Length: 494
Image (cartoon, rainbow, N blue to C red):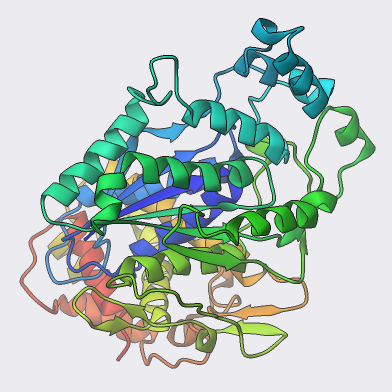
């Protein structure tokens, strides 16, 4: 099996962020790094804050592939391959809709007149460097232009490096006897996602027709419905064309009529939204300031990808539902188990709880020691876990910096996820235990980091396991990767 994930727009990027953390926690259905996850992002707003934060975590996970952590572990088991280039933009820098659609060539003709009727002067003249501003009609025109045929009857994206690399990777996997599963994520109510989610699916279906017809390639998608709202200020409105959350439901209604048709381009569609719209604190047109907190909807979008990846084969027409038991909260009981390629299952609660303990222990137990050693505050450190695995190794390395950056991003994501519902609680990890402030850490909370769980792993027990240095499957050599494996194994539930 080979896995592909394509994020489209800001909502797709946030699903990618949640998927990255679920992959790091070992929740992909693949076994022991036998399958890769190929990731590509589509966004005209390459400076989008959501995309930057998500891609930072993903690039860290990619760096972990070089860590020697040994065999037989779910930790970082998914090999990540990043598209080259990672972000594909359907537009070029400093171009507006008139430029992209070659309006001057059609000016004064019937086509040009129709174009003038369909788009306002503001829509035609606004630079698209920061995306399509919540206007699906603009995005659809641009995407259709990119996905259309040129004068020689070839796709306009032919010989485009990002698409060439993607299609080549899929073709190689299929030729090697693997089934390629391609999953897209984006909104149906905004600009980039609403335009790209249907267009990219049809484009892939056209380019991979031979394999899709043979059943060796399948396309699935998380189609994100409205789940947030915002209120732009008068200053925001004066800055130019902007997205309006008042139009989200209208856009969604039109989109759902399209997806109700048989020829949607997808073999499986997951519709995920929220009846309670979360208010975004600060409105942003786009670029770096569009940096929205993680949300439970993003999390469910990532779970949809895992469900699609674990599906054995197309079981025909069916409709599946998932919901939460209580109106005022989300809990572990609301989440499905993940099916593995070998037919086994893994509980999301067990995987995330162990991984959260692992990150907690590193941030609040290990990192302070390494920092004190690096600064000279501690001259000699003789505890066995340090002496046997880390003594003499420089902590000022790419792998250490990448892991610490990732640990910070995971803690932030988890904190935002726990506070993502208006009047509803997300009760996965105890927010009072997983704090980013070491001075506020309560050691007794470590054993009950996951809500409704008593792991029996206290901080004292963890320290004892580390000092014993006993590893579950094999003898480990020295190194940062091997130490992370020891720490992760030591955080396992009793």
